[in-house]
Amino acid sequence: MEKPNLPSDPRMVLGVAEDTTDEQIRAAYLRKLKEFPPDRSPAEFEQVRDAYELLRDRRQRFATKAQRADPLQVLRRNDLARRVRGQGQG
Image (cartoon, rainbow, N blue to C red; front, side):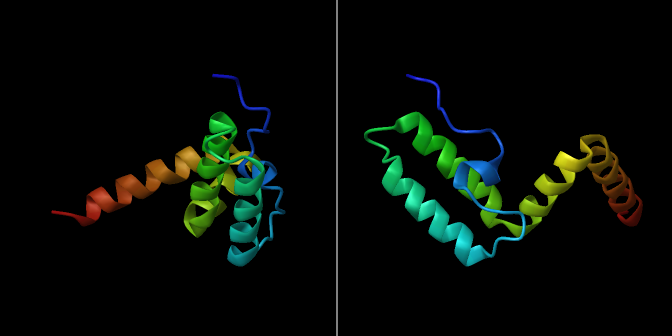
């Protein structure tokens, strides 16, 4: 299978901006599906699908934005949240 020619940033894959609405993300996804149908471009289709799955969930979308800014900060924040939740249980 051929490697996809699409960028690795999910927003760039779908061709959307940071402040794009849910409806605009869905419209961009549907346009890309026409451009890369699964039977003709399976690798590109998979990358488009993965980008949409990530961006359609608002929490993941904002985590992706934060991770691009500072990946270590996201990891530290997630670790802190796990520790706080662990203290609250029991």
